[in-house]
Image 1 (cartoon, rainbow, N blue to C red):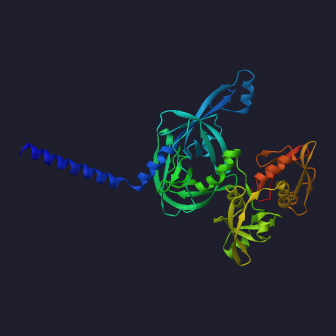
Image 2: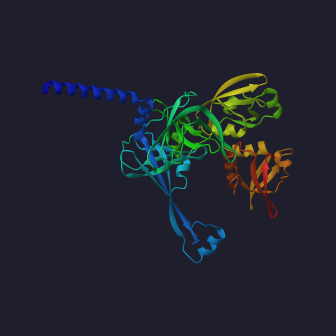
Length: 440
């Protein structure tokens, strides 16, 4: 065969091979690949350091008595522990969304970008513990690669989702799954609840704080946990929750709870049996509140809050935690046999509301004295009266919060709104005891 013909044939075959390879590559370039390529530059690894001081020379063993003993004979020893997590940059200035538990108790926070071999230090900007969110800011020169928050209110059960994270510090890990539920109320401990996206996208240790994407590569949530009691069930904070709280987290370092203006209690068992429904019963409506302005009444049953089914006051307040003042929220109400919906704009918790809540819900009127916080009045027939509390009893602790003043008590009561039964540490004479109200 002449050399020219051979060369021509070779070039034809080579072109055909390249075209075939390009076609195969195009076929392999699925929506998942495109979504990951879009998001990956903004996904960061987070490494935290925590400095721990020990007086005891027996590292790994800690006991307060031993620590106190060795503190007199040897200076405290310090050592550093490390933990790993993930996060996602949400704007070019270097703000990072992650989980609160990823950076909890950290003395230093470092962020590693995918396209850079360096670690950059980051500062903690704000924390919302109840929804497990934190905002960091990277120390460095912007602009940074980022993935702007999308939306999670239009998610569909059954759609494909993608989780990206940094399990075990091995570099980015990508898993896919199917969204099972866009709004699931899940208990998170201490009688509290949070609303999550549920999917079977695998969330390994270290994936916490990383993004959950849809097939368009849009940020729809922040991965937070995998259910230990079930195989392949993961939970993600909806990005709409993060978007609502971002302004407060960046400006104030914390979040403000929105206020609807009702005191909710459990519906009775007879209601559940007769109606086959759940919800929370409106015990009282605060005057001049959003609920009062919209015509809610004592005896109404709130079945859904922003589309989330409710079965307890704890779920009611946990849902409100994700809505700062000024947010709009929809409520589904049952009055008698009629069901209707209302739209509210939440306000800030009014001054002094915690003390009013204490009186109306538990029957306790408290006041400050020489020896601390004391009960001044106990309403007849109230939960406090039925538990045997008396005027003159001292309230030393509410939940996990130690009390020294009436302001402490009001603020603690506002923090624990709806978290029932609520533990009161009562001191009478020289004896202290725990009382849970209302009694279980």
